[in-house]
Length: 467
Image (cartoon, rainbow, N blue to C red; front, side, top):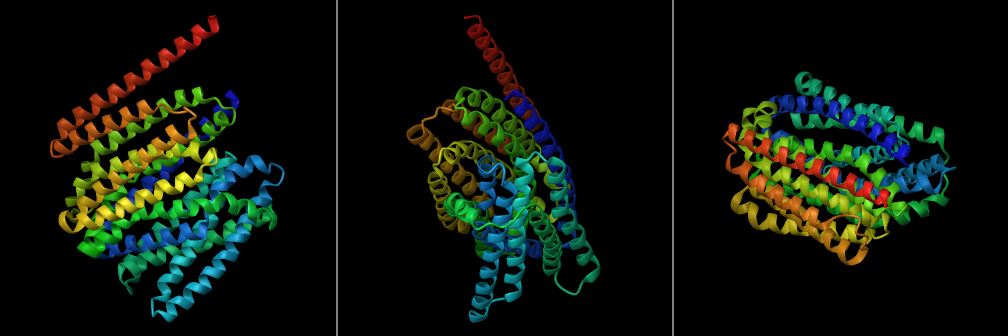
């Protein structure tokens, strides 16, 4: 067990390093795009991404997530399982494509925009299968390489088209630069998958049985994270969407941190959960949460400066959004921790219910508050919605799962600490020295707590061994 955990930690550290290297290039590109695109075109592009994300959530059927479980279920035929999922995704994508084009023609909608979203969504679905396979097999070099191929060519081609083609609006040129590299990546992924495995229909039922219950969860999660942009565009205009999306890109640094840490945590959690070692999960969870809290402290505390450095001056009025957006990612992070128990324990229905609840709250509060308070309200309603989802998962853990794998008291205290920190940063948003002092004090407090907790756990373990 210790050897497996060590291997996971080593590969996980490479995931984090690789993701941050790629994200660093992506952030540099944000600085470029916000200067060579108009705010309206930047907002239009991110509005398009909302619809692409929703189509991807529908077409994916949650099949990529089943690969983690299937790795242990079909040890000798795992590659055939992945190939079978790719085959099913291809059949489904063909059906969605034909139906979508017929609907667009009948309703006099833009067939070209649907075609772009359809191709990109199909590519995303296949890419997710390969990505998840590399993760579960600890092939972090290939994972980083695939992620690099998925991001960097899109950035380079988009910049070249916007600067030198100039036959379309920067929105259309950015869209072409986004889709064309995905087509090549799609072909590469299909060749790789089918080269190593055979399509067998018998695996379709297994994958659909695990994946379909998560469709509404994925779709609701997309609505929860992306509906803000649609409603901001409706009530405030695409320029406001551009500002919101630009600042949101800064806040999404925490998404990269969360995703990288989850790649490590999910496998450690599954190792201990399968052995019912709930005490080990509780011990590691404290350090896991505290580590992410430190990341949130840093990004939120330096968020205003990051906005001013990476974004064009037209976007800097949105620096007030960084606090609620970072808060949203923290609540989302805690909710994901609790959802691991529900998924591993066969309670996927509660995952879906939690996300639907969050999506409904988010849309409802956005409809009420965005017309009155503008796009700042959208950031706070998203944070509130994720807090509601977290409360729901805590209730499920206490009343349904009852594993006691997590300390509810610790998670509650973490929320209160983060709320107090967010309030202080918001109050002193225009005072750099005060924010720096607040960051130092909170980081020092969390690190001291972790050190004391680890020492206490070591003493308790030594006491038990002596007994």
